[in-house]
Length: 280
Image 1 (spheres, rainbow, N blue to C red):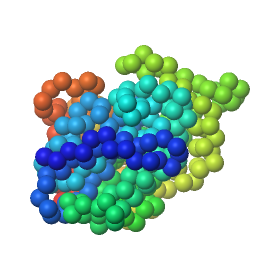
Image 2 (image 1 turned 30 degrees about the horizontal axis):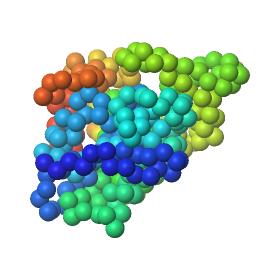
Image 3 (image 1 turned 180 degrees about the vertical axis):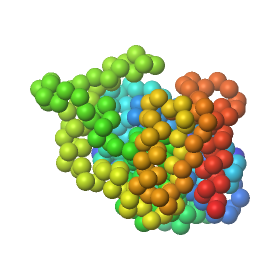
Image 4 (image 1 turned 120 degrees about the horizontal axis):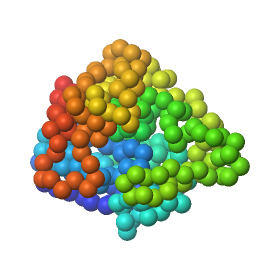
């Protein structure tokens, strides 16, 4: 299997985007899958590398990346050494990063025979599910979109709501990362950016405007993003496919770090549903 790891792309906001590519070298074009991590996430989290290999083995050109302001660095792409960057992240920066990655995959100068750039699927986990849905509604290069435990309303997430007056006054608020025990900052620009781009960042609008195949997958044991958020997206786009993975939590029963050589069965089932959907 061919792997390109930690390839550096220049982002639009003065920070690099680290990209991984997984595929089996066949000298034949393969459907492209681009995966977006979620809030407090990163491309090397948990079982995501096993997931990447599974997609490559299933015949895809699989791309995953770190959002440029996710809190990781080139030297340390795992976890959050750069909390200043994390605090300066926002939804439109993530949409710009995703566009940069799509542009890179489609770029004529570096394009490979291995990637079928006319067959691009976006997959997003959690907050990334919202980001890929918005991008899919506005970028004609995207031919299908998959939301994994995806949020349905960016305006209602903890990063966006809270004591607004106090937040504005202090300029920053903090969210505890339960795993790393870091106090993760959100600077007030996050809220301002959301309000300035509220129409674009409306997932309900984006879902209703989708005209491409749309798959929604949710675990019935998800306590972070409730299954109702998946159901609502399916209601907004009755042409979508909605699958429930039994006994799966928000991360489909993976965790970080993931020491096993195989994925949890719930994540395996999720990938099978995605592969079947894209290959239809």
